[in-house]
Length: 149
Image (cartoon, rainbow, N blue to C red; front, side):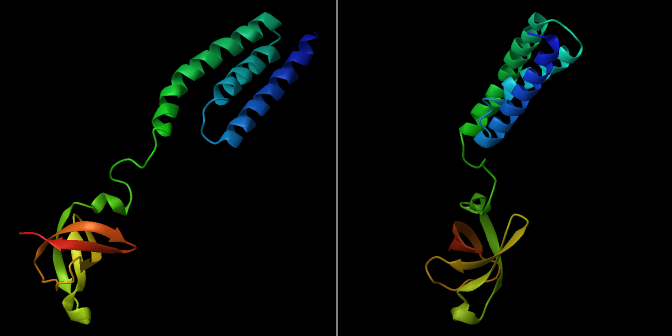
């Protein structure tokens, strides 16, 4: 095959691998092949023989696999890391900073860490300013809290 043709074959392969990776959204399976094909494209445009192009493709693809597999495994293990989202507050302690006269004082504001949250008592009891509480769950934008001693 003509050396000129290999340039375009590698360029097309690189595009297909990268677009395929985008379609698979984060699997990191085709991306290493795309990196290898880009390297082979560069080698092909320098005028090197096909054997050198294939060597670049194989070596760069293998190196990219070795680099990306640990990251792909971490991402596949899933879930939000601890400390992300409102659910991170469950089990945390805070203090009531204000109690509302509405609903017999059952609603108020609590400070958990450096954040203020609208809150309500899980047992329906009134919240008292200064009272220590523990977050039981989050319901929408409101923390449901339990009195602690």
